[in-house]
Length: 463
Image (tube, rainbow, N blue to C red; front, side, top):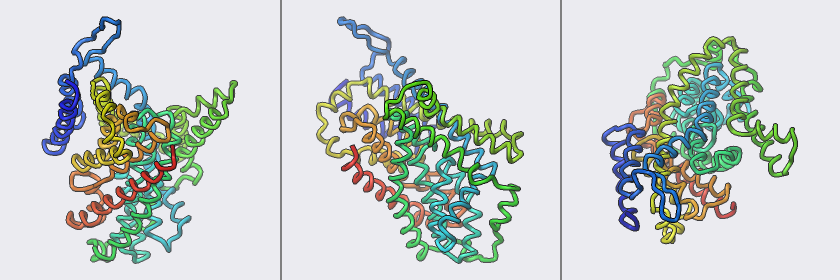
């Protein structure tokens, strides 16, 4: 099958996939793999390897699926595991709390909503937003009592910062997986840098909306001021002694520095043994491995090295589903590229080209709203968009990184009842679901729109 009928079948397949995941609660891995198989058969990909008369070899559907799956694992699997492991150690040692304390000292307690937002943004770079909210919520509650700031404003400020870093900045698994699928896995420093830049508009929008909605919606913990909350000192006491500022930052900063040095040496065309060593240490896998070593040293310094086995085991359990869903997204992308769809779209590319950077944003937003998971939206959209990048006119690393950012912006639009983060924010923020829609859901819509506006503006100047 080819032409317009194949496009219609593809659209129908995506709709069916969304229904399978959201309505029938079929696991995303199974849904994506099944849709990929059926789509491959309908698209006319041969079921066995074939050799044409001119000697051209065409892979069979089984090999297409296998290469899509294994290719994703080989390129990004270790990076996702190491990034998640660093985050887990930062949680256990209290380094995430130390990072939060550093942000508060920098911003000052006279700006509690901004402090909470920036605190969440920093902590969520290595830590999942769900875990980050749970970790930082006692600080939020203590600051609410200290400053008498609106509890809702503080909740939405914290949720905003956490969510923005979660969809934009590696080593959070979603952005890493999307970058790898789009072919820029070796340019993680660029992804990190543009992720930080693309955070500006949504951070501003999230802060403004948090202050706005805090005057109009009240949380339960604002009614019951007699509730006992942990002070910052009590929270620190649970960890014993927090790591130093350098020790807390090292697992994050050192990999960034190594990747930056590698990029500088590469652009300067430097050669020699030292240049080779820098290039080796600056590859994402090795850089994050070095970051993991610093995190392990932090764990040893905290006297918690005995927990390292359990931390690794729990981390692998956490990232396992992400790895498999990411690999399934790679399979879908491989099936699309092996079909005649890309050729057909290339010859009728005017509509998609006109949509430009908004196409991946809208596709990701639809998937996010339909099935709830930002990571699934990131990885699945990246798999769909990757074969279409030349058609959309995105060919340079910077342009493709902006596509990754657009997908991330869509992956936060919007968080509602089918998203676990929605329930974390509303439950820990002491809000009912209807108040959650007015606060968390509306805020993620505002931030998503702010994000794509900034990304669209950047795409006019960055090439």
